[in-house]
Image (cartoon, rainbow, N blue to C red; front, side):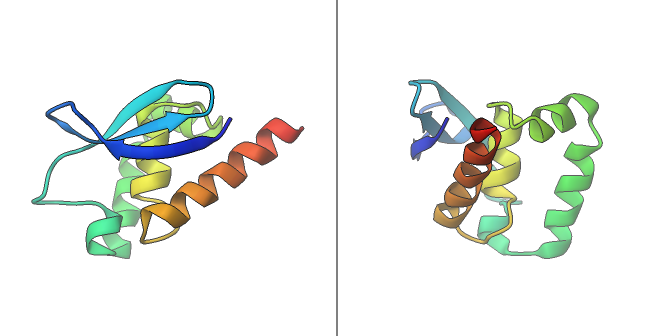
Length: 103
């Protein structure tokens, strides 16, 4: 599995749409300019709090841990991921996908 590209979502409450190489798409990321994401504000404390809040939810934790394509996974890794820009977070998540599927 691999992320091919990201577009703006056409859903009124979502920010992005991820397009996977298998044809699946997922709309993710709330449109909320007031709070933004790690990509917007680059605030490590807010990033930590996001992960604590969402990783504390057992269902989201399982989706993230298993790298299960979902709104939760893409928000966590792409909007609140290791890097402060979308392109690097896409590369980072694609590497994680490759490791899982190479086993």
